Amino acid sequence: MSELSIELHWQRAEPELSAGKFSNAHTVKFNDQYELQADAAPDWGGSPDNTNPEQALAAALSSCHMMTFLSLAAKAKWPVASFADRAVAYLGKNEKGQMSVTRIDLHPQVQFDEGFSVDQAKMAQMQDRAHRYCFIANTLADSVEINIVAEG
Image 1: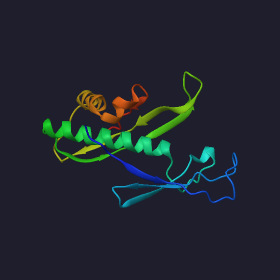
Image 2: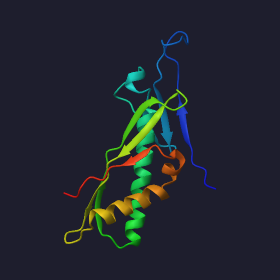
Image 3: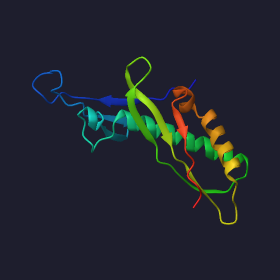
Image 4: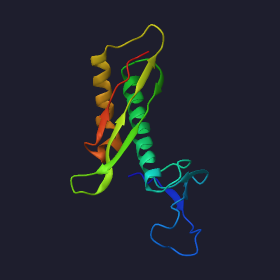
């Protein structure tokens, strides 16, 4: 079993911790070297200049989906030249009435080497397989939609 970790640090900047009157801004460190400035989502008082956990979740899903897709494409000998995505996390209330990320939409766009193409049905099948094999998607269950962007 793999163990993967981050380091998170928050320091109060205000004289006291009082409801609704403190900053959620913090740092997240990856691999003892890369620091990310994080905060609450802007709708919850965070700075739009910082990453928020909901964006980080969408980024984790998008990255996992891409790596899984590339692995499957390599096995199928698809000459993928580039992969781009725009992942969107939606906040709302879940069936229990709790605030949550209710859905994440992925919009993968795949470019192949010149002279190679696949039809939309094969692309949809490969994207579906990537979704089913992605570790993060398996963690999130049914809250992910894949909206394939047509090849340019």
